[in-house]
Image 1 (tube, rainbow, N blue to C red):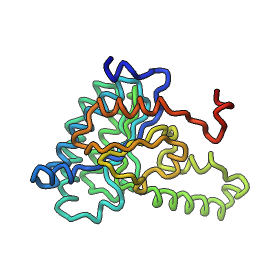
Image 2 (spheres, rainbow, N blue to C red; image 1 turned 60 degrees about the vertical axis):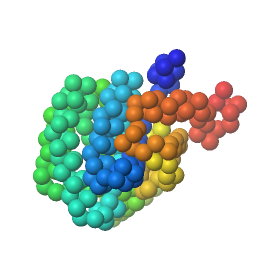
Image 3 (cartoon, one colour; image 1 turned 180 degrees about the horizontal axis):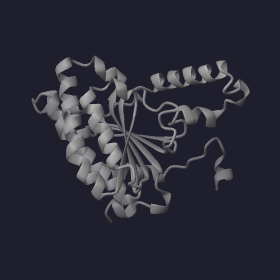
Amino acid sequence: MDLKDQIHTEKLPNHIAIIMDGNGRWAKQKGLIRAIGHENGTKSVRQVVEASAELGIKNLTLYAFSTENWNRPKPEVQALMRLLVSSLKNELETLQKNDIQLNAIGNLDALPKKINKELLEVMEKTKNNNRMILTLALSYGSRDEITQVIKDLCHKVKNNIISPENIDESVINKHLYTQNLHDVDLLIRTSGERRISNFLLWQIAYAELYFTEVLWPDFTKEDLFKAIIDYQNRERRFGKTSEQIN
């Protein structure tokens, strides 16, 4: 039986988030520059996006560029930015064909103007697509996001827009970058690393974590299917006992 046939469509995760790790190591193992690893990583993005949409996943979030990634060598950052622009242009047709809406979270103002413009244009052109929301986390850091939420709420309390007593999880959710997205059900990280790396810390509170040794450029739809099957074989209790769930 194929891996895809082992997936129960009635038990799909609503929201999958992926830390796409290992592009640099993949290139180094092959004696190539890191930029080639990033280029090959885009093939995995295409496979995972198309496979997720075909399965019926409603939300897919990819950690494309973190706030900490700005500290990488300048040539690598520039190569990543060029790749991002070309990918946005090249993948628009695929997004439209698959009825996928593009979304982005993070400090987007920190991105080069050309990238920001291209990003907003693709988001505008796909805003009415409703098969799946593909979210790119760009110049994103969860601590930065939460800090901004605190500042926003402090400002509203100070100006009597909201009372401290009325601040709860739902209010906080409405101030996050991901305010229109479901909480993460399944978080996947490639390359064998077992860290969260400042990614969606609030949103993964009850996510199932899946770590694989596969480097991102080698990650295929079959690897995605394995992660989903593993997810479906787990018992999600959300603080309750097994007896309560069953």
